[in-house]
Image (cartoon, rainbow, N blue to C red; front, side):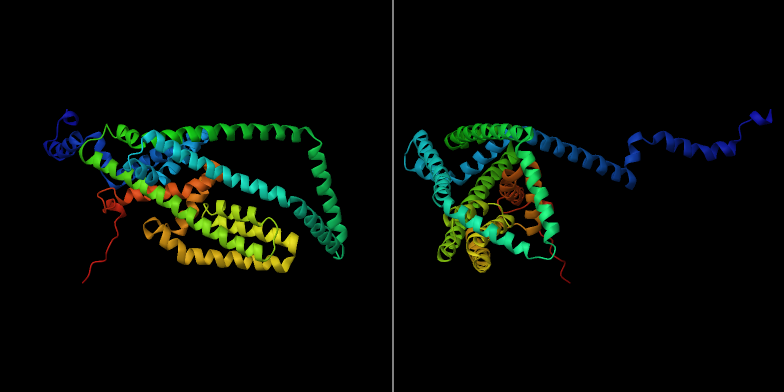
Length: 384
């Protein structure tokens, strides 16, 4: 019987532990350090999953998302023009038609300039390229390892011939026709969206802000105004810098008598919208054309011209036109370019930096007109 008898001292020792276990709620396990770490891990997983879903949707709907973003950026760039015409009493529809025609004519003029210059100088460049390739082949034949290089060259030529005569080349041509069709479709969609953005952009934005109230409405309004300002300033500033770069390099190419100077200058203008990488690619292409057509000495001079123009633009012109408020760190630009290229190819690389600048601009006005979000404010050291 003594084995089944309650021990008063043991009951007194066990009662606090039993009461503690009874009062502990299941969610109290998340209150310690390890529990908080688990909550943060779950939040990170959710954020990554949402980001992956957004990227997958963008990649699946590039025919819609890319024209939409391009139209938005162009509408922001020409917003001051639309505002100026509206303030002068011009009807919104007429102002939109005038602006849209100006954009279409500008883009068509650039395309026509490239086609005309290439067609006008293609025969001369083709003949000079043949002479340059002949010189390169003659130089290779003088090398001691010419036999091995000749065998590799024959293998490459046979591979190219087999590809051109195979069914893969035909399927590639069909894929190219499909790509052209997608490009035309995206262009028409972009022009249509741009028309509505130019005409009814402010009204569309106010419609999207209807669910917001109080401070949230003011914050969303600030973000919208800042996004339009940043995207517009970025495009206008980059276009001005690109134009100055193209004119400077065009003058250098004309002085050095490099063929296809006008198409190369237009290419410099277009590639300038891809920071860091674009200037490098444009310089390489210009140097290659000069190497084939004019020799290695002129090619080195072309490289010097490209470097000089880029240094003048980066150190003097760009800080004045772009402003420090939109200046992103080089590391951020490289990351944005990488992500944009993976998601959207060349178009993604062009759009990555302005989108990143717009996001950073939204962070800068999150808590006020000149008050960034709390985590983005600079931390000043405590003075002793």
